[in-house]
Structures are given as structure tokens and as C-alpha cells.
Picture (cartoon, rainbow, N blue to C red):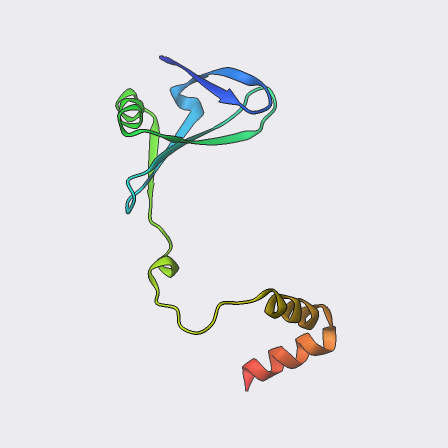
Length: 109
């Protein structure tokens, strides 16, 4: 089984096998990435990967998953952006139990 060298941000260079990595490909952007869990520290590492390297790993037998960008990225948004004041107001409303209950009740009307 071919060996793969990758870098863990905690442990440095680590040696992996094809079975140790997972590939992911975004259908819309055609951007690939690979992830692995370090055998020493159990930290998960995710890195972008170029097309030729991605193709080579797939040809060697690495598992590959396809995913799509969330539909929300393609929605049209109208109105002003949310401000810091809006976030603070929202935070204060959900922290206060009576305000939160009133907001939930207003949604059910």
C-alpha cells in the first residue's frame, strides 16, 4: 500500500496510508481537500489539494466524497445588512427569558 506524507500542525510530518485519508470535492468550485486524523495526537487536519494530486490519490484508492455549496449562497438577499447593534439586541433578547418567550409566542401567531 503506498505511503503518503502529510503534516500535522501538532506533530509535524506523519506517514499515512490511503486508508487513513478522506478526500472531498466541491462540485461547484471543483476544489478538492483531504483530511486525516493524526495517529499520534488524534487531531483532525484538513488541507486543500490540487487537481493532479487529488486525481492521483483517487486513482490510488482513496475514498472520495462529493459535496455541494449550500443553496443559501445563491439566494438573493434584500434589505440592510445586520449590524453589531442588531446582534447585541438579539443577544439581549434571547438571554432574557421573558423576551425570548414573547418572541416565540409572536412567531406562533
